[in-house]
Amino acid sequence: MKKNIIVFSNPFGYGPTGVAISVLNILLSKIKHAEIIFAGSDLCMEIIPDFNAKKVHLNERNEEEIEKFLKTVENPYVIGSQNRFCIKVAKRLNIPCAFIDILAWFWKEIPNDHLIADEIFWIKFPNVESKIHASMKNIHIVHSIISAPSRVGTKLINLVIHLGGAKYPYDNNIPYSYLNLLSKGLNALGGDLYNVTLVTGNEASNYLKSIVTNENINFSSLRHDEYMSLLRQSNHLLTVAGVSSTLESFSIGVPVSFLLPLNQSHMALTDLLIGQDLNPQYLNWNNYVSVDKNLENMTEKNVISEIEKYASKVDKDSVLSKKFVEDFLAICNSIPDNKKQIDLIKYMGESGAEDIVEILSKKWSL
Image (cartoon, rainbow, N blue to C red; front, side):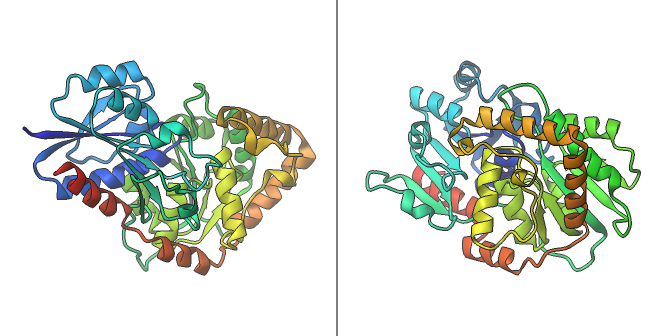
């Protein structure tokens, strides 16, 4: 009987979907006797390339909706990219399943729901192996899961600014205060930066278009493959510290500077990179507001809300917002030395998607 492999993402920005796309590309190229399906909602679908995987629109965080769909699929196999909901349903229905957790390095304690899949994949961040206990027999450490195009010599784009999807599933709002603050920096950009492209989700992009008056800024909501093509032509990337966007950029060799974090994992990755001396240029909330010392112990939902409060305070305070604009312009106009960023990706490798498909091919007889 023909196997159906369903890959689920998570609409937590664009990161989980970028990982899913990398795995889907390898599945499509390597697995010839199975139907490959991507299941997700609008934010995830925004960046899905035009490839041969079947696409199913559903709420990938709703277990009832997932279960209803999976019951219609013959001989299903489930892969969840940072999506624990599809894994919980798969376990209830006795469907073989695999969970990709690109944030294993981040968790103080690995959430229980992240350990129930038949096969679990973590990426090779420094020291991540120390989180594996003797009882964890089904965890595989793989290389970075990225689908970065080859480096090119010709650079056509001065600066790419990347916000990811800029929307999270805890509420239905984009981070308006953060975007209002960012618009002040964007409106001040000029001088040598003759070509600036800002990439983010449709809703955030449309909002920024309505408040940014600087005609040098180009706004785009791109499929993942289009974004990667744009990125390889750039001289400099300014991004939130999402795992996927960061490692993809390191892989291409584009020097990376970092925007103010939008969520808890952005803050943690920024700190990790600083600790490894890989983050020479970054913006930090501590430079403008008093950050709650208990922030790292809050839920992600509460952290996102807290960060919006910080953004609102800085945006509404003329002195603080002026300082932000000065700092923003300084890193936009200075390309950092990225040798150590490239060294990290050499250590972590780039073949995580191939690793996952090779392991699952053996485990699932694909």
